[in-house]
Image 1 (cartoon, rainbow, N blue to C red):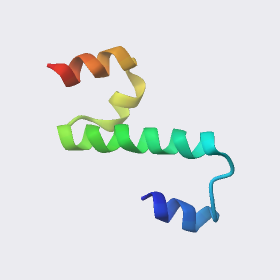
Image 2: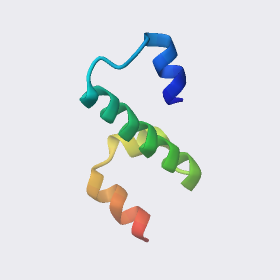
Image 3: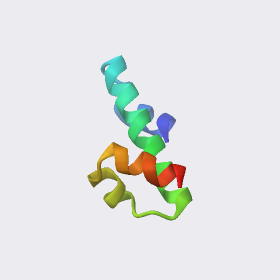
Image 4: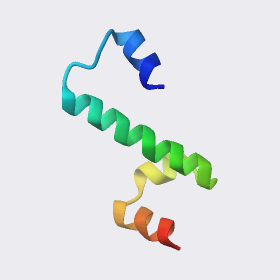
Length: 55
């Protein structure tokens, strides 16, 4: 997905933009693998996500 994103836009404008994209992509990928709804994960607090992962 990272390569597709770079091909569409040409590149990331900033390093922080690339890091944010990679973090969001990782969270969404983990949510799918765990069978969770990605939209609920993005709307929930980070502490709730960590608690669910450790359970």
